[in-house]
Image 1 (cartoon, rainbow, N blue to C red):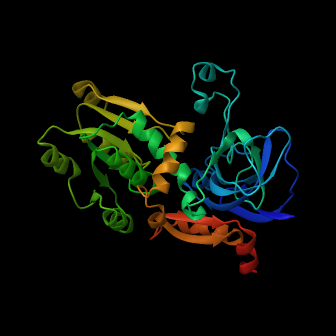
Image 2 (spheres, one colour):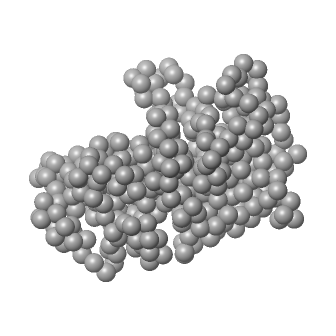
Image 3 (cartoon, rainbow, N blue to C red):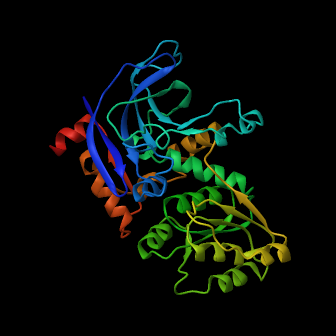
Length: 347
């Protein structure tokens, strides 16, 4: 019997035994090594997704680990292989899938939300979801491949080009990753973030960061762009003020890429959209090519994943880690160590 972290009700998590069963045809059993806690996990923890999540629910979809067993018909994979998982299962029959947009299938199973996730010592998934990791990539850093894939997809959706001026509103893990991916694409990037801790970390990574509580961001953008405005803005804060800032900083025909999950409708300055012919682009999830590019960016150090990891805790301490993230403070990314060794050391 192995352990799993389960969401049972709003703001309530537990660790409980989870049965380990052999993988079926086309499936693999994994031993997750590290699992990141992300903003979506926090939305679940808050109870915001109770209409969608069936309790008790095993959380987690940002992960790295190794294959333990393979089911019948699985080819190209073997026990011991280092992998991450693209946690999407689609039906291939809905209009979105038929149009080639399987990652936003109209009946999508997001593994870790709609079905059991990675925050457990053994996890069975379809072999089709596996993404190979280079053996040279440490597994703790590899746990940041999934959020990096989000950033790769976001930058692609916004069609960021070399030389463009980009504003990222929200300097949390995904915001910083978007800024780093956009910079790697040749863009000139600024980050807007309230948290002093997150601003300092972003600055240590070579990013220019503005504090919206102390600075007039719109004026700074005018000075930076010669009154033209930014080419692209990413809204990653999830706050009403962040939406206003992202719209205000854009120049003529600028693109606003909406990344954050907004649990309630927001007011948007549509006159600004009309007056400057702005474009609003939604960005959700990723596809396999985004994941493969993310693996390369983390592996070659373009994404300094180790700098974004604030803390690593064993499974038994995961509930406390959720509380720490909810309270804000000096944290960026917390990983849950699911290895057998971590659990033994924690006893």
